[in-house]
Amino acid sequence: MEENGRYSPRDQDLLRLSVQRFEEMVKHKDQYFFDVDTLLNISDHFTGNGDFNKALHACDYALSIHPKSTDCMIKKAQILAFNGNPEKGLKLLRLAEDIAPFDPELYILRGRILDIMKQYDEAIQCYKEALPYTEQKGMLYNEIAFTYQIINQYDQSIHYYKKALKELPEDEQLLEEITTCFTVTSKFDKGIEYLKSIIDNNPYSHAAWYNLGEIYTFMLLHEKAIDAYGYAIAIKSDYCDAYFSIGQAYSSTEEYKMAIENFELALKHNGIESVTYFEIADCYEKIEENELARTNYKKAVGAHPGLSQAWYGIGVTYEYEENFIEAIHYFNKALKIDDTNGEYHFAVADSYYQINQYSKAEESYEKAVEYCPEDVDIWYAYLNFLFECGHSDKAIEQCRRALNEHTDNSELFYRLACYLYEAGKIKEAYLQLEDALDLDFDSYLIIFDIIPSLQNDMVVLNLVEQKRNHA
Image (cartoon, rainbow, N blue to C red; front, side, top):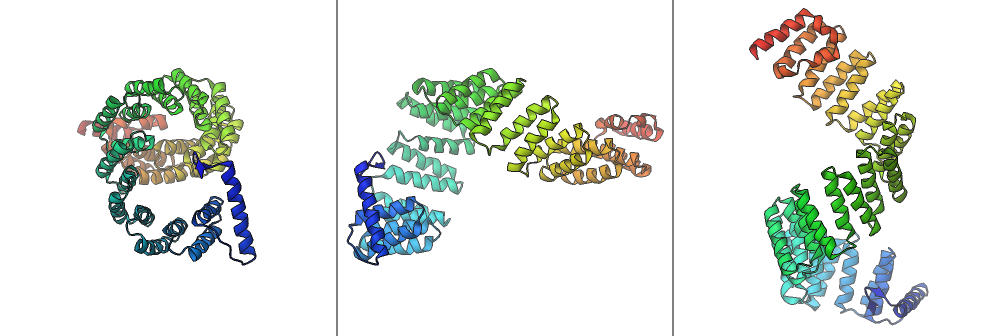
């Protein structure tokens, strides 16, 4: 027997003896008698330890002495299905169905196996066929709703989550899933209406208040979200998720001290340390409390050394202090975890540039635009670097590359004209300037920021005047 989902001490002792007896039997190639439940428990023991071959062996032995046991067939089918052999699992279930055609467990497991095989319509049909034969309708409605959710049929998913919640009104996971469906489909008003109906029936449902706050958060109604989360906390004072969400809401409204206060309350009530310390650090960074930001970023990586964003955050605090050597050290720690992050490479590049290590800076800028080509600001920084280092030809090359990613970006058109001019390709520069003026006349002043002497070039001034008159 199990107590509270775990084996009692006495049952643990019995299971250990049963496992030892089973392994002794296998070792001596003998045959001992075990009842069905004992063999199923032995199989579960091996599955829990990740020894699926032994678990299957226990099922096979069970079927050799209890050949009509559908429980044993179900157990073996589960192990097969969830370890890469769903077809074999289905085949075994068909044999079980011949013995017990109305066993709802068979329909449910067949549905789950079909889910694994991505045969979602057939899976849903199996779950529906099981409904007349089980009293656990809430669990089945949940399976149906979740499968509809997988295939993005959110209206059907919402319908079945509602049915599941009628059967299982206290199930917090169901409330979270139906809220996700409302937010993914932007059916915020319907979601609010549904959650308020639950609250009307049960004003003390902390989960309903919390999920109402989640919908308000998606709508960017942060004050209403904070109120809803607050009601959840009034009902459940140790609700760490609600404290964390209030912290995020205050952070979104730039009320960083209030955000920090709530993140710290989340920590007090067993919130996830790494993420919460990271959020606290980010708030301190926003209010320019550099030391406190760094302290909390370090606490975040202490709790989760693989959190690259926190290593990056430490580097940013040093960058703010113009301690570029330390900044590079921590940016590189972040890159060891996530070496395809363009933002991290960009930070390294900028720091190397600041300490005049130009070859390393160029290498890092190149990686930054490789991994983050959609960020035009990184392109601007790279182009500025090349131009200021006197590499006009390479600036031309990289500007054209940037234009392949940002085809209608007028600033890049103007920049290319300037780089061509600086490289001595004057006629080509004038033609490029004409194209830039045609694309976006009002941005032409940028050329004087890049090359101030262009204010003395009569061809440039005449082109600007001509385009101004035709703008």
